[in-house]
Length: 207
Image (tube, rainbow, N blue to C red; front, side):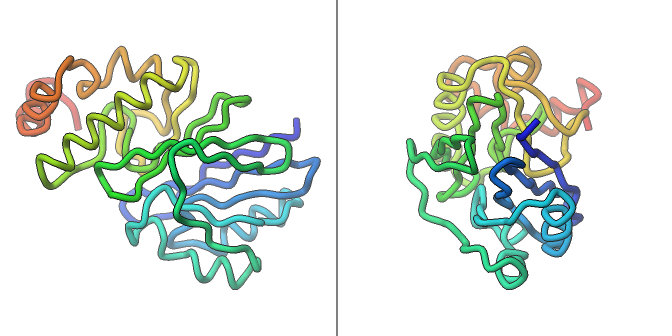
């Protein structure tokens, strides 16, 4: 199996980072390598791949604070300014970019269709979604979620930026069936769900 995919627990607020690579091509990318950049370099060494790209789902410090150190350790560039629809290769694996603002203006999702993998950052957690501060941001987040649900097949596995759910990963289909924020059918209902979330969690025994 040439596909390398490691979910790395890196501390912070239960943050996850990811090492994605192609064993045959001996190359990889580090995604959200915060707090423990040396761990990404070590995992790449163990897997016998070179980190050629440093990527972030968004620019918040708890996802980016290891970028410079990992760049020093590996010589890899820090890549930013992705647009919706951009594509690039990690070895033989195509990665597609979805722009998903809301939680952060620069938020993107990395999707590897051939392996049914999507790294969702702080847009979509297992059973939850990322926080927003204004109505405008909430509208952006709602639109981004609809974009994701319309684009990614149900069998796509989702890999979030934090371990905030009942499991460390999920699928689009399972989130459609169980995530309270994907059970609503309008932005107004979505906004109410966000405002009522503390009470909703208490009533439904959620953490």
